[in-house]
Image 1: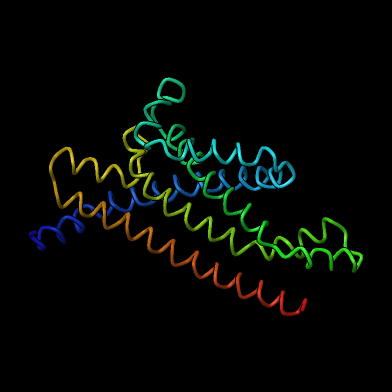
Image 2 (image 1 turned 60 degrees about the vertical axis):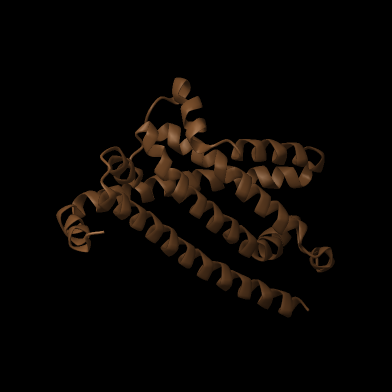
Length: 219
């Protein structure tokens, strides 16, 4: 590896690398936001309909197991090339992770805490927003963290349907056998994943401490 050329490439193509990074962040952020807006209500419904929750999770698991490249290709006749195709696939992948974590978080709640809230005269809505949700929040953030890392990696493959992002740098480097370009694409993707993982892990730890504090006060 010629490290001088490695550094020179970054200096000459900073605009391209930053542009692709911002596109990647937008793609991942949009997919995660849509995923949360779907996963939270779906999880709450499945908590009430336990008989179908296993069927739904099996279906989400089956979709999650489809290789991303194949999934993007299957949707080409319906969504064509571009970000719509990519976001749809990324949202589907995230559902399995998010719904599974949300359900696990609620199932782990101590029923005595909920019964204590009812005994104090709290309404179901108050118990949900003031007791259940804060206690489940660490598990939810943990699910978001995992989904974000998976989405960042899968989004690079989305360049196969011209969705942009850091995958453009990687695939351009692959097609031209430009190892320096491929390496920079990898560095930026890994760097983004590490930063997102660190930020969300800090939030997860903070929310966990808050939840422990609530449990201590309740005790």
